[in-house]
Length: 427
Ligand code: UD1
Image (cartoon, rainbow, N blue to C red; front, top):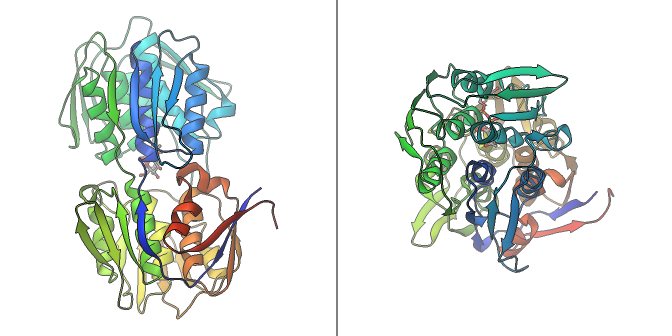
């Protein structure tokens, strides 16, 4: 397995291109199942998870055609066409690799009246149930059976609109129910819907395909079902988590980097936390310039559903404040087990104590490079960020986590002056 080697201590400077959003792409691609006409997605990031999603859709009978795959360019154009659905089963082998596979459930059910999807199981950041997805689909008239690790959903007479109130805000459940509701008979109201920008992106794409959705971007979505959707061309939003991650990377090195294509409007809570830590954020016509000239201050942040501070930024911001001048408190409220990066950051010299859902971080003068590894995507990125500032060499193992969610990470960071390379083997 490959590793990433970083020799830390260099100041990052220059321009870095932001890619299309992973979590938007993984919801937009299954939307292609809702129509027999082509759905063309522009600005699709090149990521292992996007490839996995493509393979899954291929297995269901969706054809995929990629353009713009020039090796020197970021992003691709992908045309998906679900002319005829040949299978309604998402097998364990794919779902266990990528939890977002669960997002084919709603669209398959809406289009074919039948979907069989492996249950995802737990993962490194916690238990991650899918009960809300299933209750939402049941409310639309689906019958759900659980059989040997699979969820089998049927709606032989089609789905009908309903009022659904989620007890907890869930990104995935909102997406699944929204995709099912657009083809259901009559009106669906989703209360306490997640408002993440990736859901807004999905809803806008569905509208471009002929769906009728009101309340986009609010916690109450009203969907008037239509009998069919048509094809569309849609541009995937910029990745706000990738943007935030590279902002932390620039800041921890005392750098000055223009994040080209970054969209500030979707990043309020992240930018506020960075500003409180003493990072300068300068809007520019091309994107967002991130600069740090003074020391970092400690911060207090709690993760929450959008527009709150994203759980997907917690690990990266933690890496940043390990070298702040003061103390910080980060509290994780979304996932129960999302501190797997803490012992690894500690191996690099960070001073962090976890008590319950909170992590207390005392800033240290410097970090030192070490061999490290992480068990999930954002945790791995936090180790890269720490490695950029650490003295000496850091080896980040299990690079496949990074490849799931960061398009050509080492190339982007080397482009702004980091000493970083991918090396083959376990070392
Ligand atoms: C999505 C993102 C993931 C991100 C997370 C939080 C995608 C593909 N994944 O994950 O990267 O880290 O949002 O922003 O976009 N819950 C239930 N029952 C359910 C579903 C969720 O109890 O059926 C709980 C979860 O355990 C968690 C909370 O609801 O505590 C939020 O989870 P959710 O928003 O669903 O996260 P995902 O959609 O899995």
